Length: 272
Image (cartoon, rainbow, N blue to C red; front, side, top):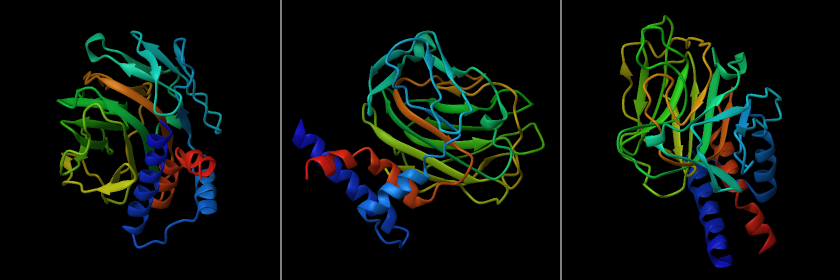
């Protein structure tokens, strides 16, 4: 086990190197990684799924927004990538629903970042990671991050209401029964594409789809946020999810790399 953990730690450092140098930036030193990890401790919501029991997934973000989630249809507590996690069975329509629908969960302008560890049982069809959006009605919502046949997909509803825009990775990037660290960052109102990462490395995106104008600011939406399903279309996630974070700003490539590496730093430091 020790050798496996050490190998995972070394692979994380390699992933950090690839992710950062791909942008021509210098590789952070160990103390810089810790500092960067502290700077990404400003999520507006953070569901660690570390409870291990009960029917509530607490929002433990330092922001104090208290966007706790209620477990619907009994998703199972299981060992996760970090401590505990939740396993979702799509046939039982299991998901997590935020208790409130506060303004902190809607991103009306500026930037957004979403990060998560996922281990899907099935990569066929559409599988929602996190959504605050309605797919099947004319009055749309705010944003969603999902997986479709192994591709990652990010989308939102630009103003005015009535349409969604979305964008997929060019190639399948998620494997079945394998842990992946996934992240998306997007700066609303610029017309630019989001940046999608898998295991700290940026992946290529296709063109925007949908009938809305991706340069417009998104709609706000009063319904709760859902983890593991869309609000109205279903698209239930099957598998395990862990360590989900939502930010109201764009994380830098260095911050993304530092966050994934932070999970392995104790292995590297304590067993060097």
